[in-house]
Image 1 (cartoon, helix red, strand yellow):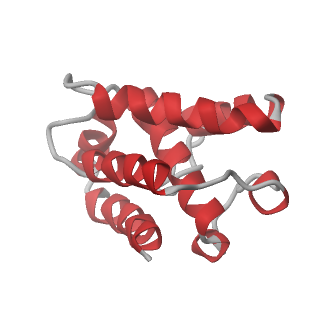
Image 2: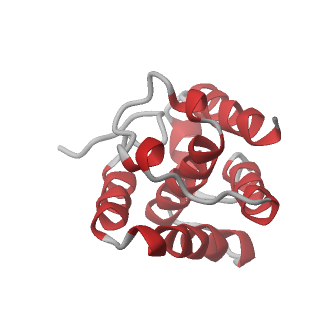
Length: 137
């Protein structure tokens, strides 16, 4: 059985993306995260759950690198977030903010729909709102 939970790193797709980032050169992590987030933000179509889960993980990593306190208590946070954080600028913050806002749109993405169908939509949205707040500070 795969990992599934309301946290940004509580599912197999996000964990796979974290592994990809861990194995990449630290200098290339930002590009990977920007690419994954950008794929969703620039796309106009319905987003499948695996891609949205990975993009959410990327956006939360942006928030964490900007404010490490935002991920206190979160499971599976990579050590590099504290040791070698991404260089977060206004453009990357804006991209992550747009992604998290899109992730909470009903009927726009499969991941939101799956949580809403299981009566977990409020928990899912609350978790993402926490990271939106961290990006806004």
